[in-house]
Length: 416
Image (cartoon, rainbow, N blue to C red; front, side):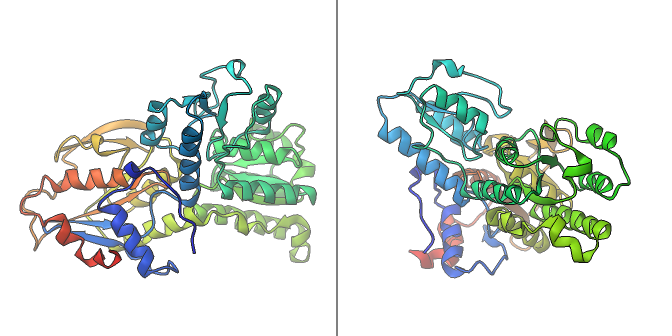
C-alpha cells in the first residue's frame, strides 16, 4: 500500500484531485499512460496520467507544516525554497517561515542570527555538507525537519558507493541548481566529481576520455564544474553517472550510454566493468513517470498545451520542452498568467524571459461539441492540484454552453 501524506486541504482540488485519484484506483500498477479527458463540450482538457506532487514533494510539505504545528512559539527558517513553486513558498512565508537563502545560495538572512532554539528546515533538494557544518557549529539541529527527497539521498548514497570503489562521479545536472550543488558537495567528500549539463557537454567529456581532447580543453570546457584537484588524465579512467533527479531521464540514459560506449571503445568490452559503474538505479521514478506520461499526452494530440509550475522548476521546464516540440505550448505558474482568451503571460524557455502572447487560444471562436478545442494540460512535480483546477475553470468560463462539472466528472465517480 503506497504511503499517503497529510497535506493541507487547500492544496487539493474538487476536479483534478478527483481525476488523479480515480486513475490511481483503476490503474494501481501504472501501466496505462493514456490521458484523462475532461469533456466540457466545446472545450476538452486532456490531463496527463502522471503530474503534480510527487512522493518527495508530498513528504517535504508534510514535514514543513508539521514543523509549524509543533513549534508555534519558535522561529522557523527554511534554508531556501522548499520546492520550486511560488504558491507553496508564499504560503509558508505567510505563516511565518523565513528563508535563509535564495535558490542560487545567496544569503538573505545571515546564519549569525540563528540560535540552537531555532527550527531550520532542510528543503527537498537537500543541502551541502558545508552548510550542514556551519549550522552544526552554531548548535542548529537539522535532523528534526529534514525534507530532503529520499530519491536525492539515494543518488548521494550511490555516489558514495562508487566513490569508495575509486570511480569518479559524473553528475548529469545544472551546476547552479540547489540539488546538484548538494549532490556535488556530498559526492566530492569521497570522490572526484564533474558536472555535465547535456549531451553536448557529455560528448566533449567523451573526447577527453578517448584522448581526442587534452586536459587544457577539459579545464576550459568544464570550468567551475569539477572538484578541487581534478586530474582528467587520471580521474576519467573509471567513472559512474548519476543525475539531478529533475533532469530528463532519457537524456541521462543517453549520456550514460555515450560515456559507456566511449569507455568500451577506449578500453575494450572485456574491461568495461573495470572502468564504468552501472548506476541506472539512481533515476527518479516520479520524474520518469511524468515525462513518459507527457509523451503519451503529446501523442494523443491537442490544439494547445498549458504546463503549470514554478518558473525556476527544472522538472517542469523539461515537460515544457517536450510539449513545445509538437504543439503551441505555454509555461505558466498559475491562472493569473492567463490574462484573457486573447492574451497569456508565460515563460519562454529559450530566453528565460516572461513574455505576453496574443491570440493564444486561437480555436475559441466557433468551438462546439462537434468541433471542440482540445487543451493539453499537465504540471511539474512541485505543482499543487488546485493550481490546475484554477487554470481549467478560468478557461472553461470563456466557452459558451459548457457541461457542468458534475456531469464531466461522472466517468470518475466510482471513487466515491
